[in-house]
Length: 287
Image (cartoon, rainbow, N blue to C red; front, top):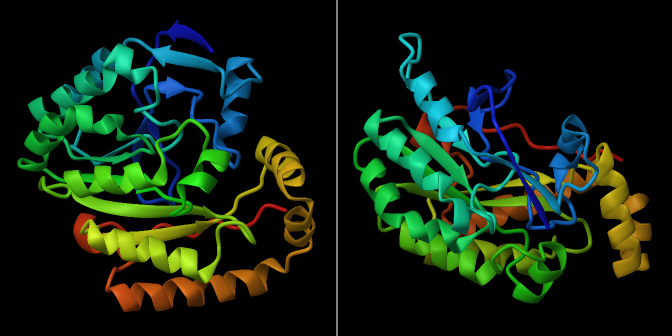
């Protein structure tokens, strides 16, 4: 694993219209979780690097850059989405502590945030999340692609096991933060078993998750080659079925499964009721 310090010109990235948030913040470029389906592999081309999982760039001045933005008269206190591209609680964060600096600034300026992570390292910052959630909106979501730790270890080798993610959300639900589960992506013939999906809903209900949303597998750009190579080596039969999938028909059937489980466990997919934003567009297959 290689870590390289960089200086960022700005802390925030403007998100194109059509997605739920105006701005996102990523402390790192690259991610050590090693998720086989990662959609963000293409972003390392901008760093002249081809090793998204093992060459991690650290924005060492992220807090200073963020405060510069917060001090602008034009800043309106928009919700900042943290971790939309790379996980801000990947392993190196235990050494840098940059998320604590970011959260302290959000408390200082009373700025709302949403945080997405697959790591229980976020519990290190329980005190700051608790404090911030008492003064402004805080959302915390964790991606759970499968309820089974054995499978999550295969497809997300260096992220926290699924069981630990549920425990983490359960603890954070005790703050004033809105907690949710992201089942993203749903992998055909691997993680889409109706029993597995229902179990995710069941566990989400147990830890008082306020919402659950799902997204389809996105195989665009570098992700397609990386994922399909993994899948072929993991299970050639699943590979063959997936590459011959009728995507439109599949999406319709998948929607029925999630809708039924959501109604059964009384968990809404509509988190706009909490953050007053439109629900995100579902991803589409890229093959």
